[in-house]
Amino acid sequence: MIAIGPLAVDPFDLALLAGAILVMVVAALTLQTGLARKRLNDRLDKVRHSALVLSGASEPASKPGPFHRLGAFLAKGPLVGQAEMVLIRGQLATAGFTQPGAAPFFVGLKATLALIAALLGWLWLQSRPAPPLALMMFGTLAGSALAGWRLPDIVLSRLARNRKAAIERGLPDALDLLVICGEAGLGLDIAFERVAREMKQAHPELGKELGVTAAEMRVLPDRYLALANMADRLKLETLRSLVATLSQTMRYGTPLGQALRVLANEMRRERLVRFEERAAKLPVLITLPMICFILPCVFIVVAGPAALDLMATLAAR
Image (tube, rainbow, N blue to C red; front, side, top):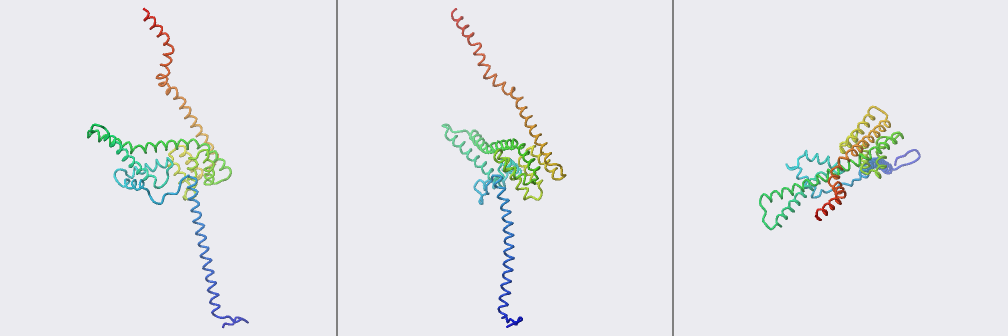
């Protein structure tokens, strides 16, 4: 027994008390570390989820499919080189397909369509009554395979062109909203996120791109990198002007609202000029249809009765 003042304490009880205090301290430190780690993971998950939600993308598949494996195999060979893979990734990003495995999947799809087209060409040759010549068989199979290989490129370029046009149509409205957000005191990343939510109804493609850019601004160390990534994905001169304006604002402290308002007016003026150019081309474009389809009808209506009367007069003689 140990005497502490008027009390007598057993050493075993003191050891138990010290052990309990030590366990409580270790548990508190462990719980605090676990909570801090959980908060950090929650923030990272929130950033990833917000990027996926704002971009309209889905979670990537955990296991690659057959198209992905075939495309990855072809990317290592001489048929599809690394330079072409870079071009394909750029075209896919412009069309809105930003998933990491989109390029191998696209290459695998092209190879599969080429094989299917060659098989259809071979079946067509076998269905002919006469046996095909060697040159005809080679030309048919090669042409079918080439058509199947190029068809996804044509579809992808059309999708990219339509998406770029849709995004360009909504840029002036997005700039007006950015001006309002900037004058309201919002930061650039918060303003991009707010504009992305507002633009998802009227211009969904532009809303997705702004959402991805807002998520990248929160993750990347420099906001200019996020803006440059957006300009590189879409390859639009108007977006490059926007990136240059925002970069100048962030670096030199120029007024954001005034610069964006001037840029929005310039974009609307450029769009009006393009519409005027299209309107000026209309007379030239409708000349050939008018000559081929309208003038013959007018000639028949005007000269038809006189020609019938002349034929009747000549027949009476």
